Amino acid sequence: MSAVDKLKRHLRPGQVYRRADLLPWSNAVDRHLKQLVEEGTLTKLSGGLYYCPRRTNFGAAPAGDEKLVEVFLKDHRFLLTSPNAYNVLGVGSTQIYNETVVYNHKRHGRFSLGNRTFDFRRKPHFPSALSREFLLVDLVDNLDRLAEHKPSLLEGVKKQAKSADHKALKKAVREYGGVKARKFFEPLLAQGAMPHAT
Image 1 (spheres, rainbow, N blue to C red):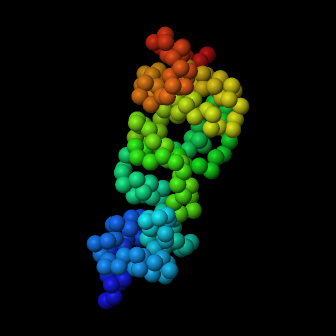
Image 2: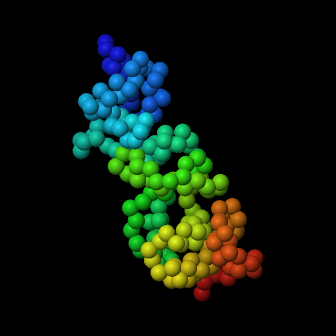
Image 3: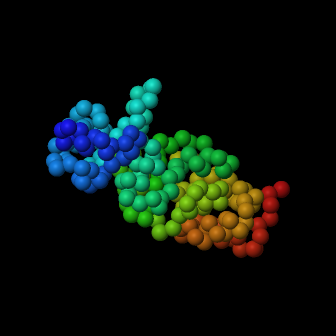
């Protein structure tokens, strides 16, 4: 069995690998990686990042976003979201964005992984999963990045905030809100219990 075949035995379809992950199984990792990419066993996603495609009836399935980001960051603590998530809040946003945002503790900037671009934003705190209250807070903090009419969006947020879970919204503002969100929600939360929308 050739050295490259020995390396192939350790590859699992659907998995993403860093170059360093493959060092224990290869005595010439760069040459072997080049060979495996040329023959289609691996797909190069970015510098030092490779994907072993999972074959389906429709061709090679792309790497899942969660797996891709986890290996890229070398960290499982991140939150995937998109400005499209605001469209379910009922605040008047309808724009479709071709963008995946990654809140994380390590990286900041836009990175192309495979055919996709991820907007990594380093934040000290973010929830483990998206919630309605977090998205309302997040929208206000990211208002300048959105294409919609901003005053209309803020009016929509005010209306939705009235029917939101007051305690959860207060917690989201306190734990995850930036300067803009805190300033915006402060008068809405000041009474201790917001009136429900009529």
